[in-house]
Image (tube, rainbow, N blue to C red):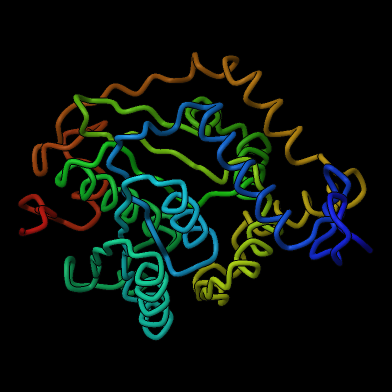
Length: 303
């Protein structure tokens, strides 16, 4: 097959909108789509200092690559989770990805910081649950301590659709009230603004863009991800997308139109954690409570 816009061989067949594109026209299409998403949701301003959280995987690598290409002032943060060889390889990929685009990379190692890696803590709490809590706290506190205006993550359309689907199936209305492409800054800036530039591009498109640009990334899933319900929801949504192209984007956009239905569930009022002075729903925030901290962690980068 041939590209819709030129006579070159097709690099990819898009199912929604349905068309064939060569490599160059696909890259243009992808970048235009991401730029439009950034503008539509007011994600970034030209002078923002942006922290991109990079894992070594495809989504965050593509996010950093595109934002750097667009001319944004970005620095990157990699959180080494302390999961043996998996984390060591992830860090190597993150370093290489940032070196290629010329973006400064900061690394926080969980085992050095907290004494244990993810999966090494004796707790009844699911590993993915306290891993997510730990990552969210670290990248927010790092951004706050170092004066970043925005944190950008690599969540794509498939991630968002499965997250919304999961929370509707379980009627987690508080999560549904907060989910979206932009999370505004709150609590006097201690909760830093968070954005998802890949919000409207599919995982398949992200993989194709990485391939087209020669972006190398870690393909292995986290050893603790086996059996995660998000993978089941993604499989269901993929099947629906196969039968009816456009299901995912229409589902997510429909949710955004009706998101106000859940806003009454936003009951959370923040106070200062007595340990770290960051936002908390109780006397001690979930991060300090889980890790048993008695003094705050300082992420300020020494100049």
